[in-house]
Length: 64
Image (cartoon, rainbow, N blue to C red; front, side):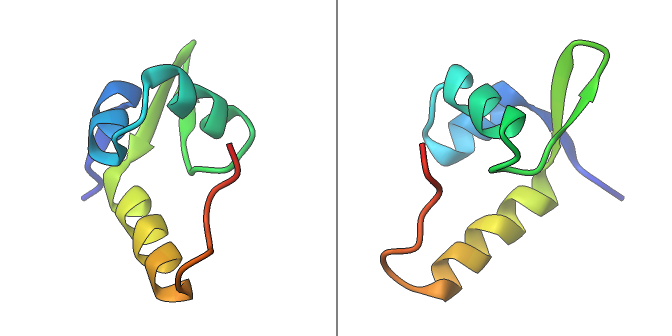
Protein backbone atom coordinates (compact mmCIF):
# COMPACT_ATOMS: atom_id res chain seq x y z
CA UNK A 1 0.00 0.00 0.00
CA UNK A 2 1.24 3.47 -0.88
CA UNK A 3 2.50 5.80 1.83
CA UNK A 4 0.97 9.12 0.72
CA UNK A 5 2.58 12.19 2.29
CA UNK A 6 2.43 15.98 2.08
CA UNK A 7 4.90 18.40 0.55
CA UNK A 8 6.03 19.33 4.06
CA UNK A 9 6.93 15.71 4.81
CA UNK A 10 8.80 15.32 1.51
CA UNK A 11 10.61 18.57 2.24
CA UNK A 12 11.69 17.30 5.64
CA UNK A 13 12.92 14.05 4.10
CA UNK A 14 14.86 15.79 1.30
CA UNK A 15 15.91 18.76 3.48
CA UNK A 16 14.22 21.23 1.12
CA UNK A 17 11.68 23.99 1.68
CA UNK A 18 8.00 23.45 0.98
CA UNK A 19 8.13 25.99 -1.85
CA UNK A 20 10.98 24.09 -3.53
CA UNK A 21 8.98 20.86 -3.31
CA UNK A 22 5.96 22.58 -4.90
CA UNK A 23 8.13 23.94 -7.75
CA UNK A 24 9.77 20.55 -8.38
CA UNK A 25 6.39 18.82 -8.39
CA UNK A 26 4.82 21.40 -10.71
CA UNK A 27 7.65 20.97 -13.24
CA UNK A 28 7.57 17.18 -12.98
CA UNK A 29 11.08 16.93 -11.52
CA UNK A 30 9.75 14.91 -8.59
CA UNK A 31 6.78 12.53 -8.74
CA UNK A 32 3.60 13.88 -7.20
CA UNK A 33 -0.08 14.47 -7.83
CA UNK A 34 -2.71 16.98 -6.86
CA UNK A 35 -5.80 16.30 -4.79
CA UNK A 36 -7.84 19.41 -5.31
CA UNK A 37 -5.35 22.23 -4.77
CA UNK A 38 -3.02 20.20 -2.52
CA UNK A 39 0.04 18.26 -3.64
CA UNK A 40 0.51 14.70 -2.42
CA UNK A 41 3.42 12.32 -2.88
CA UNK A 42 3.97 8.58 -2.69
CA UNK A 43 6.96 8.29 -0.34
CA UNK A 44 7.97 4.99 -1.97
CA UNK A 45 8.31 6.82 -5.32
CA UNK A 46 10.34 9.60 -3.69
CA UNK A 47 12.68 7.06 -2.08
CA UNK A 48 13.00 5.22 -5.41
CA UNK A 49 13.87 8.51 -7.13
CA UNK A 50 16.59 9.23 -4.55
CA UNK A 51 17.96 5.69 -4.86
CA UNK A 52 18.08 6.03 -8.67
CA UNK A 53 19.93 9.34 -8.40
CA UNK A 54 22.44 7.81 -5.98
CA UNK A 55 22.91 4.75 -8.23
CA UNK A 56 23.57 7.04 -11.21
CA UNK A 57 26.58 8.40 -9.37
CA UNK A 58 27.98 11.73 -8.33
CA UNK A 59 27.10 14.65 -10.54
CA UNK A 60 23.56 13.46 -11.20
CA UNK A 61 21.08 15.86 -9.65
CA UNK A 62 17.71 17.44 -9.89
CA UNK A 63 17.82 20.89 -11.49
CA UNK A 64 16.43 23.63 -9.25
